[in-house]
Image (spheres, rainbow, N blue to C red):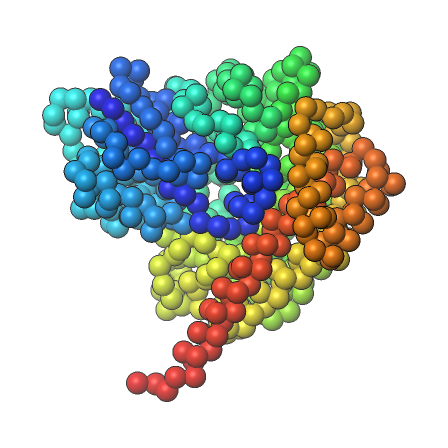
Length: 511
């Protein structure tokens, strides 16, 4: 059989860096790992084609026997369009992934076969059933799969040169109980991991394909610290032997700051960035949402401890908790500045399907609409200590202030000067670095306008004078700021429109 696996395009957000990808010569930051994983589960007698709409157009005229579509909640609208078009053309369409698993009721009857849950067991079963002509319309995971038995994803089927980084996965699941999180709903609270040799084989394949950056997509890489340390020790050995061919980033919980051995291993394995869901500097908000692990130590000190090991913290921050009043916006800004966090993915609280938060606010009558999955443009919760227009206005001002030239320069410069040593920080110019630098110079200085040019040259000059070894990082941060601030301007317009519409609705007389 011929199988055509489709990933929908991502909507613009802080995550996608759409405006700066052309400067990097790439079309997408990194691929969704779902389809390479499904392709790896497919017996080799079948022909498999992976299409990521982020890097290439969808071939709706394909002669595939099976078309598979995946996506997160944020992809739901585009997923429906893709599925409907393929079915209109008579193709046999199967749907799976996070949105299908969280909201199966929205897909029943809309596709030929629905997959709910992880696919390691159900996908091969379906292929056997399909070959026998006796397939079911729905396949559900009975037990969480053993990842040590999973085959290697088919990275070779990706258009590797169109991505900035490749992705691998070590573990699924998280031991914590954050009220708003859908990860524990889908993958459980007991982290399950691949074997260390399995992960190292995936890394070697990424190296063979030319990857310079790898994102370990675990929602909490250190959910099982003992096993994470075992993997990191092997990555340290491999990195030293190979001359550190790539840099890594991943997602961890803030308690990493309390484990110096773990921080040292992350640094020595060449992890340069970790994303951490800090959520809020307000203790009451953290307690309310069950983020107790973030209340056990000083937040600013914890972030700076991680920075001292040479690892940049990218923060996930949220406004709109029940404990948040109108002062939270200034409090968030002060925290991010004090903690020297250059990049903060700050959004509004959203109740995702099947989470404890969704159940609670629904029972309280404060659930406004279904989740869009995009916390940067919408909150589906009626706030407790402010109105919805006030939430949107405060959030809009917060992100504008976060990516104001001066605020960003101050915390980024402070981070670059305080960041600890990294294992592969020899100042060296690789092939293509000068071409990339010239493109960044063109877009941020020559064509960036007076304010951006002054900001960029000021950041570069101060870094060159005070910490020359961090100059390449300063160039990267200047480009990142352009991407974030460009998106922020678009987002600000959307938020102003939403705020005005909410205010208009509140002014309407009751019917």
